Length: 181
Picture 1 (spheres, helix red, strand yellow):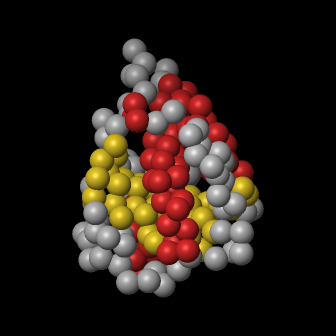
Picture 2 (cartoon, helix red, strand yellow):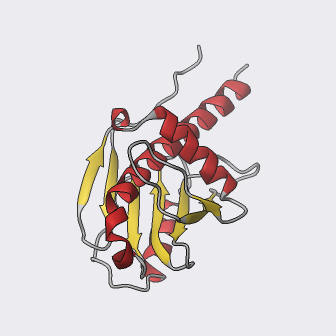
């Protein structure tokens, strides 16, 4: 019998600038926006790409790039953590997002968390590593210049995090189905 795709009930949203922690649920995001965010995230693995439009918002002239953290293993497993960097039209960093999910075995969420903390250019709130799944927002030097985009950034963060988790769950499920007799 094939197991169903497992998606978490909620995601923690950690703001490293303010220390605020909130939660979101999957029904809070548009699946159409989610697919657009995920395809943009994939394209951003190799280049800086324009951020996608989110329903109900004027899209700022931001670009993004992304990287994944893979657990050790041969062959490599599904990513357990990712980082997304967003910059403005002048190439000034606005925010960095760190995504982490629950995983069996080695997780790179802790590694990604340390990178977020140790490479910060601004002062951050002292927070403990949160229980995955979570998305951490690290403010960058350009965030203060883009206060009008904060609602858009929050919606983008939430939408990308949920779609990334859904896709990682789908990849896990596909691998488990492929290895079943």
